[in-house]
Length: 222
Image (tube, rainbow, N blue to C red; front, side, top):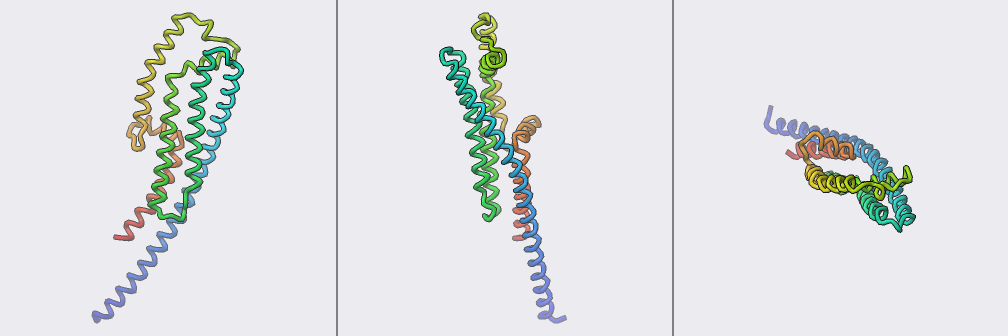
């Protein structure tokens, strides 16, 4: 076979291979974007529900503060829990805005950056909410008042109140430790489970689908 014929056959097969790779890449991209949309839709539903819950809690707490404004223990407890409710509303709203702003027509690498940012927003919100652990006594004070109409703060003895203050102080380093362990690439199983339960499962699945596109594109360029 002449050199010229060999080159023609080679070029023809190379062209066919190029076409097939482009078709495969396009098919994978469409399929993975559909899967990504599905995962993010599930996350939207979850985050929207959380916004409503936190917003409802905030409205109830503000009403509670107004109705009990003459009693410092209720005002202080209500303000503390209101702050964390607002953190929940703002944090989840930011995530929803970012999801709705995702542009599927952008290069997959840019899209991947946006998903990583979404994961970071989710992590930051969870960290801030978990900082409410040392303030558990605020839940008790308000809970007894709302559920039983009982002022547990005023009618409790000094020893019980002091023990709760001490416990709250001891919970500060515990909460800081928990928050410090919440990292994007955490290795501990309990941290992974906590992040997954917080919506990280949907975000990680979406990132995995996009990463598959990126990897195929890299192989195609080699």
